[in-house]
Image (cartoon, rainbow, N blue to C red):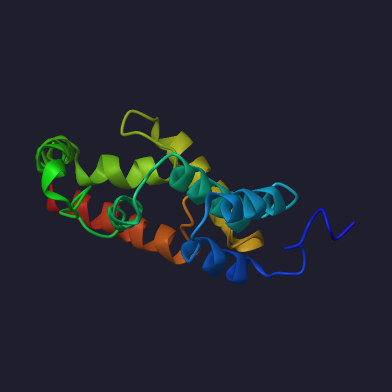
Length: 158
């Protein structure tokens, strides 16, 4: 049985390291097969990362995509040929408000009724308390509280 799953005994951290250091598509396929047997959020995120690598996404693009959560000016790509894409990305990003960006991280929009927002935030608090990896983007309860504080601060400034 373990012949079908040579990576079964590896932790998600070890699998992540294996993927990030992978030098062949075959290795990525084998790890993806192992991840298909796992149901945790981290396993699903790593499987998505493998899909991106197999689709030709460069590590710099993946890192830039991950960094967009923490930086308003993070470039989408770093190579010269992608400068036009970076300019368009930054122009599009400038059209979004901070409130809309924060709400979107939690599956909401500025058009959602206030009571629905409260209910959704309550749900996220409970879900993240029960399972710290419940958010599909890997956000934590601390991220939720920080976002709520940012929303409160933004409304005070208005």
